[in-house]
Image (tube, rainbow, N blue to C red; front, side, top):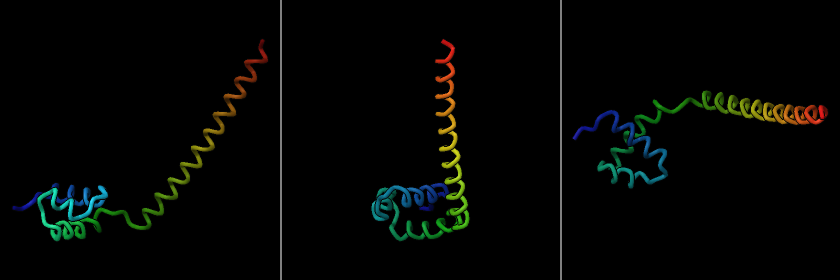
Length: 90
């Protein structure tokens, strides 16, 4: 029985992200282990980001974490300033 492209991609996604063994995934899907291995090798190279893209994503993630940390600190400062000035009015 010929499997659809969508089925193959989903099988590869499950095999790579579920934490289950390839034998288990293949058995659960009713396909051979070697078939699943072939699909993984076929789709893995096409779907995975390049090492450069991974590095770029890691840099962007770190930049956003830093920006988030700065914004949280600024928000805390503004909260304290608001409380200080509110207490000065009374």
